[in-house]
Image (cartoon, rainbow, N blue to C red; front, side, top):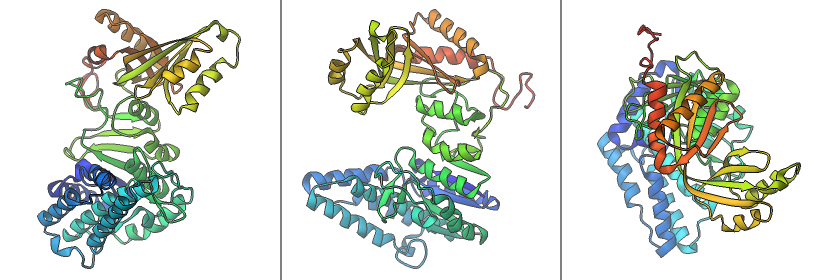
Length: 462
């Protein structure tokens, strides 16, 4: 079997739902299980509705109802809502959502538990419409909420983790359907804890749902369908001739995602990393494109670099103190100060008497500065960018030499350098205003002389 996950942009309206169904029908022989996000902007609409209920007691489902009802009408399914089949509880779900919003407006409170329940309605409505459409085209399908598909989580609302028993429960729930030729259409992003409370899986939640199911069922592969042609060699908004990467390893994909490539969140890959199941990133708007395959082991590549990414709006913190010399507790003191304020550090570089690190810019650092100044001199620099090169660890010296030469030609000073423990990434700091030029120049150096994807260096198909 395979798992096919489709995001909100792939399900934005009736036309998109039809195209997704066509993609699914082409792979029915592989026994697909679908994992869906909410349609289009529904998650944002739900948060806006909650905001209105909190602020002034207003309860409005108009944007949410309109989007779903329009899709039903255009698909010719409006008459099926409320009757037997996947849409039998469509209206009751809308009524349940309205009642929840009324409750929020009365108590003027939105706890994490209530918020998770609220956000679940997007996925729950989405899977019912998709299952109903598949059924209408002659494909046997069943709409399943995540808990009906065997996904049990802990009670960490808004950032839940799947519980261990999910590994046994998921195949028990799905295998009978798959064996009977029925396509399970499952809500991504959500789950229930052991007390029956609805939870959400946090960042990358729908992708994580798909890989959890793939790992539990021993799937042939997990397909993650996005609105891009896979993982690209760079952000196409920065580098106009960015091209798809055919194959990357789990480690390479995780580094790219962490440092700015918005394709797969690193935590979403963990279940497949543990089981060795490949992940295929495809474009639902361009299904003929080969996409990018994420695999356990590296493949032979014609160049040293897989991709280049950047992340702007970074803060650089430089600490210097002779007290670092021979003081085993110095770094502990530094990082404890960050931990107490729940500030995550991205990159770190150290020397005998100094340490440099980077942070997301969305932090008030004045209190932290005061504490750190008790043990070191502190310099905080804003408006920085991380440029990350992900590539072949065996050629790291070549990558560093060419990268620094490029920066020297551009007249761009490198302000900090770090190589990750995975050894597949080299990251360095430049000014925000310099990042685009650096990425474009590096991309030109590393990729412009390579053959198109799928061809060898002599132009023959690889």
